[in-house]
Length: 258
Figure 1 (cartoon, helix red, strand yellow):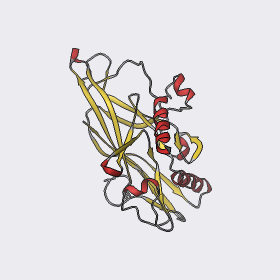
Figure 2 (tube, helix red, strand yellow):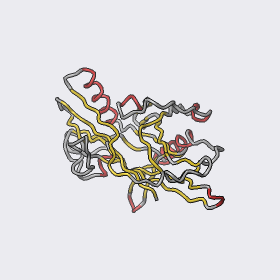
Figure 3 (cartoon, one colour):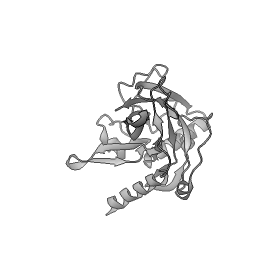
Figure 4 (spheres, one colour):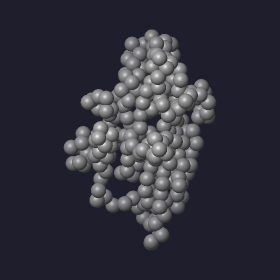
């Protein structure tokens, strides 16, 4: 019953930012957008983060993620206002049918000897400890994270975690159980990379371009020691609980279209 209630709550939350009644958006490949009102750029929007372990939601910028400061925030509709949504533009932007691999978004650098930097890292660790979840939106659809559960089934969630924690005793909490490489004790693993798959359907009638039908995401963690030229390979990015010194978090993404 508890799982059912949780699932219902997540679906209700997803419904909060879905905008029924809007005209479908057509997308065309770059250079082929001669069709009227056919877009080639796909914008990704971010919403407030929340957790089933806390009653407090936080805005996306509260965790010092890569942010977009040049675009205006879209207006919420009544349903979004009632659900307490706070939708913001993001620096994640894609060109329709143009795959990209390991694209750098930004790098955040922290010095634990700086009180302000230490406070930002401590807040990020608290968010991972409480399993705070991203909620992203593409073309008015929630970006969903699907993962394997018992009996070969898949569970899809309209959100994904910012990271996870492995206890001093070596017990993987929350999303840390999905990766056997997350085994450093008393450490926070940061999901600083996302693989995004955008599903689309070609509209043949009157050459209307294509419509996006789903967006799925797989959060990952990569060290990426060369943050200016990341390769999104190798071991995961983790932060020891009592770490001191300089600490960098490179954020990256890959996108594919099917």
